[in-house]
Image (tube, rainbow, N blue to C red; front, side, top):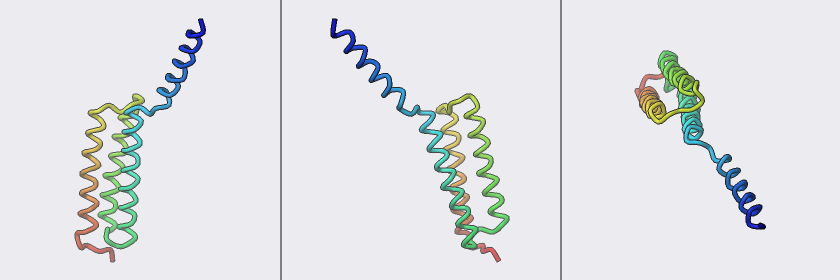
Length: 110
């Protein structure tokens, strides 16, 4: 008789812990958002240091805005699936390469 309330209490405790865990979609969304923030910061630093021209900055920021729009559409249903996450990771990889190239292409802002 005493085992039943104890079992119910344990089940409740474990279910609460399970609910507190972020889902794969939440972790992917956080990862994508953090990477976007870091890339936007890199663009801003490139502008400040003069390594990125105004035209290059506009192109890089347009690329970042496109990734943000894809992210918003992916989250429209409330979750990011694996295929969407892979697509956004690839887009961010290309954006990362673009940022690096523009920061190191020896064109300087005047």
